[in-house]
Image (tube, rainbow, N blue to C red):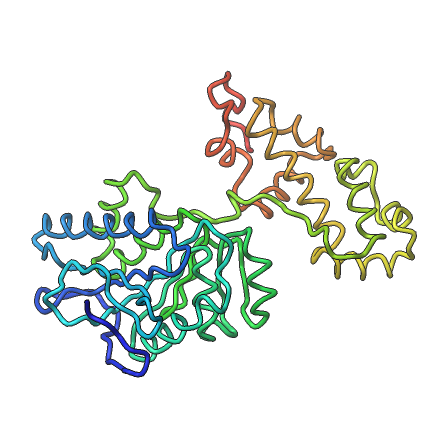
Length: 355
């Protein structure tokens, strides 16, 4: 097997659309401890499909080269475990850290791989991550001061472990040129299509998405994530208010700043400061998330009209709540129901209404 030793520096080509001659562009997939093999093989197939479609347009059937990389048994170097073009010298233009079904990898398990990734980046390779793979990129130090994303359930851990990274868990993909981070476990499809678009062009990307029955664009992670309030912050007064808000459904008719502060036993200004410190949100924002969460359940599991749902979560003005829902979710209530409703076949809950 071919191996890359840590001390060896190589010159890697920039990630550009490939012309009609020369070696194929190599995309390396990194098999770190706990990496999701379904994503590794899925990406391998996705790029293979893109190659066949490119050939159908008069291009090269081997425009993209796929390789898999892992640490050897002695952890002394990184070796190639699979390569579609083993006869060629290996110069990955792109390296992807796939998602993981396990907890985010610890530093002692990824330190050697992080050094290798940083070295490849210095040589010109574009680095990509999916889900927990962002922790591997973060270990390189290359995400410091940058915007990045990861699975919404890992976002807080990533931000705490690496406070110099600007973590945005709403984004499904953050493309920062030489570094691309993708969010959820299945965001490997989005990342794969983005790379096909960059390397082979939009026509091949759209055809690849159509072949795979994958939505090629326009998604955000917040469409799928659930609001998970911070409850382990250690501020008992704020926690008491959070539990009360959950029981009340955060209804505007029943809660107010004065009532929340009184429930916490604090002066209003002190309450505002401590609430934001503990939860990361203002009380109004926190309540909006709780109301939107209840509305999402009703949009998914019932055929109730949106004005009825708005009233049920505490809004007399449905249009005002529609704006709140759009701000929090990035989708209108009607679009959200069309995507996620289990009760979609029950009647016709929306009759060309402004939802």
